[in-house]
Length: 413
Image (cartoon, rainbow, N blue to C red):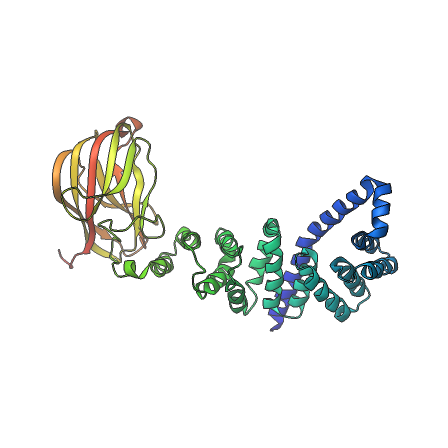
């Protein structure tokens, strides 16, 4: 391991111990309360219990009396040779005296006897980090989180720090291959951290994607939301394509699933459909032809439809014709319903369809746009009522859409 990596590992080890120290002291406090709540009963119990002796040994160690701690821990082992707590106290005594090899050996014994003990696993993780053994440290942290998931808030920041250590992708891949129950939650937590976490997030993503079935829909959504939120359009699009089932990858187009063949996922560059008061929005079978259509049913009240039906596109600079098919059933609104294409970077409108009202059978509609070369790396195609003030939101009737396309036009057309 390089000097920089060693420094990073030592720093992570220090953070780890600090994060868990408060937890161990909390456990010690509860133990002391138990012992002193009923002194007579506690004294009788302590005389017969190896666990009580180990508790007292820990208290003496924390008070600085290593000799008494050692005697009590050894007494606990005489009463119960399988006392993990006693081995842990002896390990702490050895560490205090500078006998790190002896301490680590006893900690390994304690971990085998009681793998659920977070303090023991934390000490072993820190020791592994000091020795440059990142994967071993991660396995100890995995043992903690499997048994004590409530420690996630303390450990996740340390796990993210460890993802900066050289070689972290391979170490995390090995741990993620065991499908730890905390893995997805940790990755999603990492995805909402500030931009300073970009490098470790990429490491975690690389580790997860290398493990079959490790990335689930919620994990992809978190990662895509991070990239899209940072306006990293092309990496986001490529990651989204990778997340699609093979059958859907065969149907990529400038507008994905413009005939609504698949259920909208609301993720990445797929259709996003969210709730609109005063309207019911769904994908339905076409009544007079094969295939599906997007149906918007207005409920004779205000419906602030303004982008809740949308898809993010990555059209290259140039001229395009956005087209589709529509059917209207008694659609009433003061200003009408229309499709709008706007730049995702700045919200600037590139073009819009004619406003739709009334009743019409299935018919074609289209509008032309030009995507500029600068400042418009992605675009939103959205359906909206052309309202300007709340009074213009009232709508009734129904509209259906399908066969939405964005075809690039030859220069000069």
